[in-house]
Image: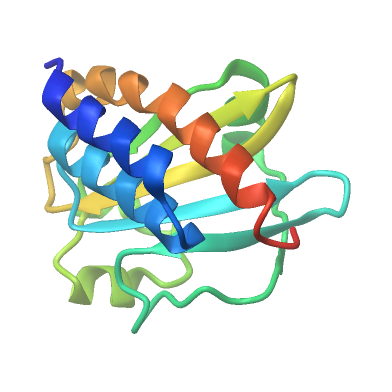
Length: 165
């Protein structure tokens, strides 16, 4: 599922960005080409301060770039942080109890999600959060999502220079 032209476009957009929102938009466009997304956000993580911040949103009207929120360290988070596990939830039933804003997510037509950790130097920089219709994140798409990790690390390192995390 390699998409070399999409990666080349991504690289060109990073080389020429002028506004940090363009960095998130470039990764969003790449994720669309690689795994497909209906809702796409980037969440930066500051382990030392114990909080997270949304630094990109495909739907700023309902998922705006806000201040920080407390970091929730649960089993899912620890798996991402220690094992760098890409987590997929692919059914409406499995999404129950996993998202505090599930009704809003469903109103956007999403009943499947994939969370992709971006890590460098043993520091979990952030996550790609992609959502789409039920059944969308097949094992093949989850495997393809691994190709987004290095681009995501690059984006989070760039965004750290522009956002107070």
